[in-house]
Amino acid sequence: MNMEPETEKKISGRIIAMISVALFLILFIIYYSAMMMMSPVKKYAEIRNEFGIDSTEKSREDNPVFSDSTYLRLLKEKAFLQSRMIMAETDSIYLTLNLGDSTAHLEISGVSVHKVKFSEMEASKIFIKGDENLILSLMSKPFTIANDWATIKKEPVMIKMAPKDTSEYKPDIMPDTSVTEPVNYILEMTDGTRIYICQQENEKSDDRKSRSQFDFQYRLREAKSSMRSIFRFKVPEYHLFIKIYLPRSDAKIIYRAIPKYGQVGLYRE
Amino acid sequence: MEDDVLKEDVTLPSENKEPEEDIFTPESLLKLIKSSYDRLRQNTKLFRLVQAIGIAASSLGLLLLTGYFILFIAPAVKELPGVRKSEITNNDELKKDPAYKKQISQLTKDIQRLSRKYNSFTSGQSYIVINTTENRFFLYRNKKLVREGFCSSGSYTMLQTEGDRKWIFKTPKGKYWIQGKITHPVWRRPDWAFVEEGLPIPPKEHPSRYEYGVLGDYAMSIGDGYLIHGTIYKRFLGMPVTHGCVRLADEDLEAIYNTLSIGSKVYIF
Image 1 (cartoon, rainbow over the protein chains, first blue to last red):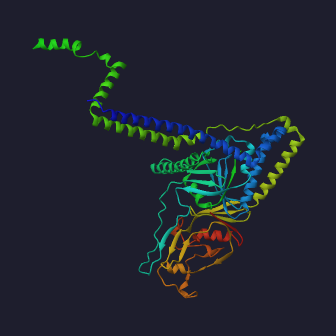
Image 2 (tube, rainbow over the protein chains, first blue to last red; image 1 turned 60 degrees about the horizontal axis):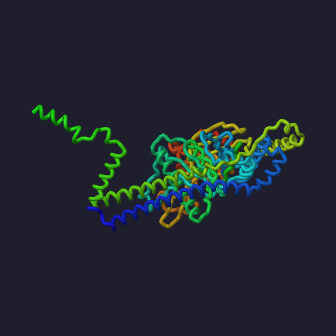
Image 3 (cartoon, chains in turn red, orange; image 1 turned 180 degrees about the vertical axis):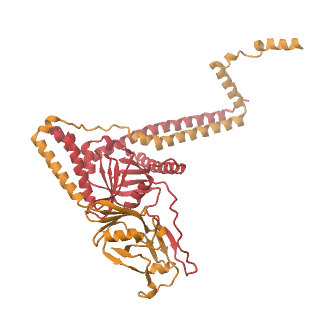
């Protein structure tokens, strides 16, 4: 009635294998977490090096004016204006995000053509709590969009084949404007900073489903990229981010208006 | 008969049944598990099946947990490391320092100068803003909104012929200006207007190319053949249906025509 020793061996082998896999996974999770936690630290150090913040800090210790609230506020205001001046020089459409008064503006050559207030915002700790001089350096020049992911098309082009003769011709019908597609997108800047724009409306199941799908796809892409780095024993890249929630119509207007490689100006108090 | 029943009732608890409280003791539970396990092991086929299901379920569970960790927990972990917040001071003593006062005054002057320059981009003269996503227009005079309403802009239709000729009907975006003003405009039908209806393309100056009364009473040219004009298809106002021009209702067109002059800015987004 008892099992054969060979089968017993097989079973214990399987159990050992399972325990080994579990152990491996636990070790991997620890390693993955450690690498992930290192990524913002590395990014922070990179930005500090890029903008030479360390040398400024030395002078900050010597000169208390560098940590004075009024001085810093004025410097940031000036930096933001300078950044907007650069963007206004072009005839292109650009976006400015004022995290202080929670407004997003679409501007063309210095003229605000569309303004929207956002109710909710999330951002990287570096953006919220980071060194004031670092924020100042980041804001002093416009960000340029390098890539984007969206749930809507930038240009909703419909292809129509020309009729061969008048018998094939059908006059255009009235477009259906009642269809509302969920609007969520990510604008990635050349320096890796990402601006997430999500629609505020989330009551309908279609909206929730679309946002979840978009978020899941984004997480998958990120995980893939992190894995690639981690398997090469490299710290994964960290992306500074700002996430804002806008009414659907405004989110759509901004996405459709801003050029593929457009510019974004940022201001944080 | 009654006696038998009584007998059974009396003898059962003491001889056959174990006291109820003993069932849930750890020892009895272990005993139960062990006996069930032994019984299961005796049935080799069933044991293997249960074992396979167990291994598969645990492997799947582990995989799902790892996936959940990678997709949802690790990105949150990334934001955990603390970022040292730079110290911001508000020292009253410093504010009395002449050097500090000079720096603040210089910065304030710079900001005022930049603000003036930036505000000068918005013309004090009349200009029009056209929102192609929502098909609305906004007319400004002396930096104040004086009229708004619906318009029609490009349909984003791409007309293709079998001979691989292509036209895309979209309204250009950016900064433009009024280059010409015409009353009682005549539409000179381009090639696509014939191709679209399946008609043969006539020679350049053929009378069939000229259509009267379809562009309304006024038209304003913004360059590259694009016009702001009236329409006979008023029910389409507020919809993206044009071949790239901007169509307006008669009253709006007249007001805009009378407000804008040659050189007035047209901002399209």
